Length: 359
Image (tube, rainbow, N blue to C red):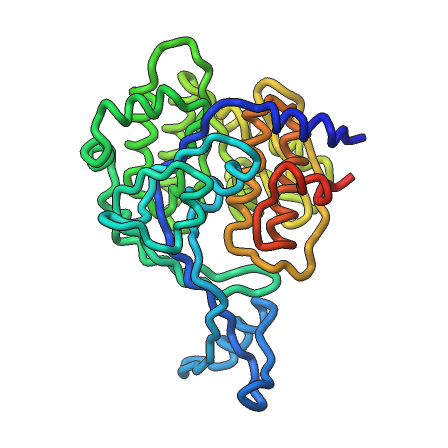
């Protein structure tokens, strides 16, 4: 039986700071018109399969489709995850790309919730959004020069060191679009002060398929080595989990509590402190210090917004981690956080979080 009041109280009493590195995306979100009868009467593609079937039917010829702008919004790891943690009361700092000289107006609301340290102009992601998922196409050339030298030059070594020292949890995303990911993580670990404070690193890779398997394997080994110094949490969605599990001879089952045991096995093989799996129907997690956990979620058939859902889940999980909740409770808070996001297009605060908890 969930003690929702206990979890909410822990979130509201929580202190500590989270710092997230280092991206910035303007999300240009579109819907695709499947058919049109008039200027006011038309039908949208609501399922990804409708779009892919249309493309497949074209064979080798061209495909002409009409798109409608749905929204222009702040996106990416920092904005989506940071807004979720901040709305749950966490002191959140974003080292981000929201404008080099002037802040892009799309990030104004993010700045009302989080402390922003903007060091470059944002990248752009074009998103085709459907009721059951999304297709994201990012122009990320600006991210290719983001390395530790650039970060220290933009922030100053002293400011960067103080920022790390003040943080309880440090998140880095996304591996798939950040060529210097390994270097940045290594330097973060190297520059953490030996002051006895127990910090944690958190990662969202975004898409395992973006880079070649050898690069993925090298990064995972790198994190394994660094985990001996700083405990690390890797959070993966359903598709990433299938790839990860297959690497160790496992399959990702449907909503079955055995998935938590498999998550523990894979976590052990990775050598990381925590592994979290989140899907449309459930979340599972394993930790070196706790028993594996599983939490079913309430499926949202017609979400108001899907882009950023995984990041929002992560934000709920991070806030619950900082609040000292146990592994199962962290999953329930994360599920409730993303549940609110899917149904309202905004991540919830602690006052309205309770209505999204699953029993």
